[in-house]
Amino acid sequence: MSSFDPVDPLGIDDLLDPEDLAVRDTVRNWAADRVLPHIAEWYEKGELPVVRELARELGALGALGMSLSGYGCADATAVQYGLACLELEAADSGIRSLVSVQGSLAMYAIHRFGSEEQKQEWLPRMASGEVIGCFGLTEPDHGSDPASMRAHAKRDGTDWVLNGRKMWITNGSVAGVAVVWAQTEDGIRGFAVPTDTPGFSAPEIRHKWSLRASVTSELVLDDVRLPAGAVLPEVTGLRGPLSCLSHARYGIVWGAMGAARSSFEAALDYAKSREQFGRPIGGFQLTQAKLADMAVELHKGILLAHHLGRRMDAGRLGPEQVSLGKLNNVREAIEICRTARTILGANGISLEYPVMRHATNLESVLTYEGTVEMHQLVLGKALTGLDAFR
Image 1 (cartoon, rainbow, N blue to C red):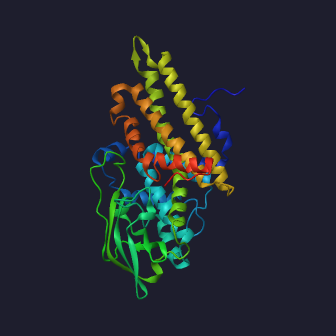
Image 2: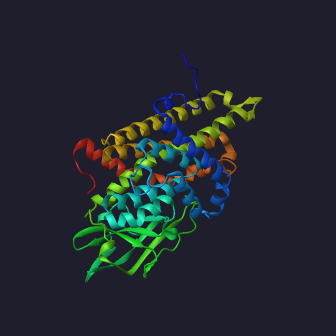
Image 3: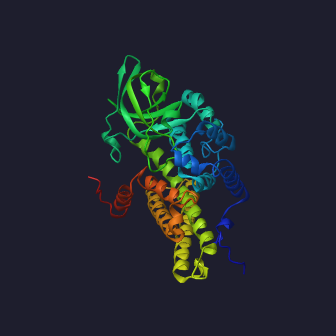
């Protein structure tokens, strides 16, 4: 019988091959060296001052568009990409968001739906981190209902002219290319928009209480004129942006467990060292019950993420399964953070510990790329065959 490992109580590492472990450890070591020493300061100031530098370093690691093939991408497995997301979010959700938006939204859209010219123009530089991308779908008045978006693109000769606004766009003000979705006479189309195009601006959104170490912007498109080659030619309709979102949500399934793991480990260490009534609080039954419940949900969530990753690698992962993973893992991750905060007591609200930072970040993760209610309805429709969206 092997001994019990509090770090890996279910022996999940046994499911990983040496390449998986190498990817995980590489990203974990990078985050420990480049993010953890500074993240509390960045979070407190509400900025990510070295975002371009971090993007280039992540590109050198192969973490940008890592599950894509060709064009300088790493062609990693879905499980390896998930492990990277877990380690990045264990550092901070903002760092994982940087990578998710770059790879799973902007690069994925160009890789899957773009022309060969668009792929050659953008993907190698995005994979290296030289160019940062963003993804413009959500609008000030349209989030869960993207079909009602007001952004529109009209033909003018061989050109396209884009007008509209997008909101809550990660990487917006530091992006070199924006994948923007807009209404056209043919349906919803995607456009690869160089951000130096006249009429394009991306004012940064300030005064956030969540994802503070992340660049979040509005996109303003005021008669942005683009050549015919800017439109993504291989998709029309919501299938395009929704497939990108499904890929990004998969990363969240893993990433949320990184935030949960960081909070759980902080609570476990604290419970073994903090003394009250003459002994460590980890020796009291109620504290042990909290730790046990947190460990159960944490490692169940990691197992779920691993299972979905294997299905994605086999080409058998459906969007409803991604919704199940995102719904469960983010919801459980928030509960783990909240329980960890109670174990740390007043220290739980201090940036000296990661718990409250993860908890507030997860409040955004809970509702972006599909709210709880939307994922419940996706599952409800899959279970019953009845559409309750309208």
